[in-house]
Image (tube, rainbow over all chains, first blue to last red; front, side, top):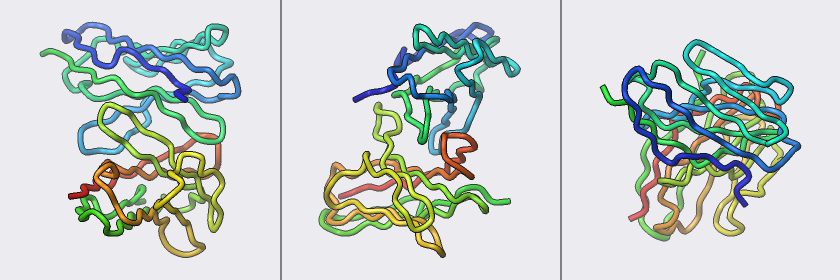
Length: 109
Length: 114
């Protein structure tokens, strides 16, 4: 049972463009929604996170938008750079983190 | 100031052998989680442990897999009689408490079964 659905599976964006990754969840008991970034050969690293009582959180070029009624949330990367090329995972948690399947993002130079 | 330490980084086993993966959590973290990553499948939860206790093993295969987090020493994920399908990257994370906050991941162990 996949509790966190993520799309798209892969994404190509021009340098300077906006990268958007979408996620949906099923379990209303989730109370923490982090995004992780993973580079090849490395472990996932926390990028940004949000709680369901907030509709938006921004940290630098990264923004999470959260729609509690629709049970959806998304990551926006503004002014995307080649160094942002990585795999991004959305996740949801109550007692443990459940991950989406990931989005491979490639930023064209 | 070390993060989560996993070893070995790479492990090659022949079918039927045992694989032992080690995870030393961040100092002061008492919660450990193991995940398996297969290509194109993201990270799948396997087991959640606190010191000397298994809290949630709902993602562990029923046979051949076991995990422990003893009072002293690292957490161990043990795979007995490995098969080709066990080839994957195994990641460990630790946190100071439950709930997903403050998770820190290790760099993983890449297991190859030949």
